[in-house]
Amino acid sequence: MTAAQQRQAHKLLQTGLSPQAYARATQVILFKVSAWDANCPKHIPQRFEAADVATALAERDRRIEALESQLKQLRSNTPTP
Image (cartoon, rainbow, N blue to C red):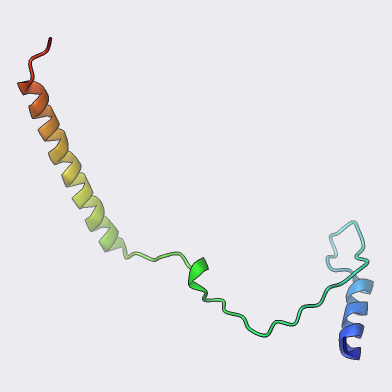
């Protein structure tokens, strides 16, 4: 640990990490980050255009209506015991 890092760690211990905390920190861990990718695709949700979603939902609704119609027709052609 360099002298500057030691001073930084000491300052963090003296000032505390959070002013709202009721406890006082007794140790500090400093990390040296060599790379950072805020655009990692693992954490970015997919984006869909509203028009594409509306089209997909309309297709789904049409398909449900067709299937319900077929089911109704099949039920009306089947004699009840």
